[in-house]
Length: 248
Image 1 (cartoon, rainbow, N blue to C red):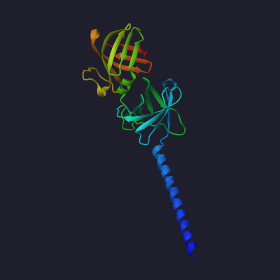
Image 2: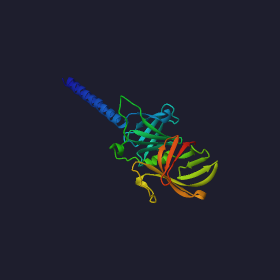
Image 3: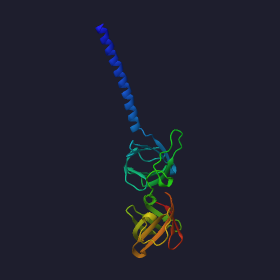
């Protein structure tokens, strides 16, 4: 009888222990999945470029995976401080999300990307004051500053070229000869230079050029269009419009 009783106790311990182990394993697996699997979100960009984004559990990093027409490799980007939205950088790639739209900069090219329609999950929303959600306010002047870098050729005078450099300097070229240089800055009403004397729209982005040399002057423009291919400016004090195409 004692032997039989002992076997019953041992069997009960095994059953209870096994049940606890299975349930604990399920709990751990579930917790681990919740902490690590935030899903993958697909985007389609200008020019037919596609990629997917996978955020970490605490959204301190995002992994971007190339899709159709992408020229970058799979890269993990780290969160950085920014007033332009949720910003991540790494491996020469800059990812900025505001609302459901994102901007991806790679290889000197900035693309606007939107979520690809999915029946399985809703788009990831980074928060945007314009939509009434989230606490991050999109700084459009910073986005413009990142997108305008490069050489822009006048569409009305092919000899005239303006080169915007990432360090905030600008060079004026005419017939392949440098005619002036200076500084440039993009701004909105919130961070406008003190010397601006004209009314500033809340929703517009402006460009100020402080040129030196033979054409020394301070010029202010409203940016009415900026895409990877085209730039349109309106003189704020003199009137008239300038149009450019991106050449480098």
